[in-house]
Image (cartoon, rainbow, N blue to C red):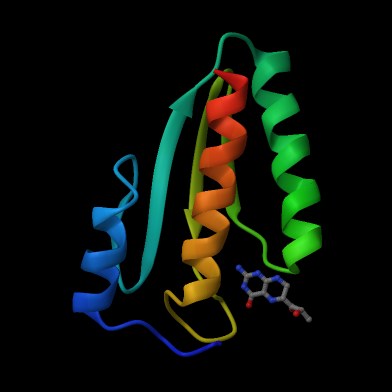
Length: 97
Ligand SMILES: C[C@H](O)[C@H](O)[C@H]1CNC2=NC(N)=NC(=O)C2=N1
């Protein structure tokens, strides 16, 4: 489960995550919400999912723009846990947009 994905595997997974970019050192996406409270609400929902998965994204908050970065810190790179977290973040962003 904590196995590092190869560069090819990361590229392949990114093919199914059209808003994400990255490489084996990490994947990320940026999203702009309608307001600062809307952005914080998304962060709050992502926090709940991160706790559920016991896997946490790095989050940069700038007014209503959020940047998520997913990397498995303990493994030192991207694993399937990051891909799953990215999909769950997309679900939340989609329902907030
Ligand atoms: C003990 C617990 O599993 C951890 O320390 C988790 C928590 N969330 C985590 N999130 C991420 N992104 N990488 C980790 O290595 C990590 N470790």
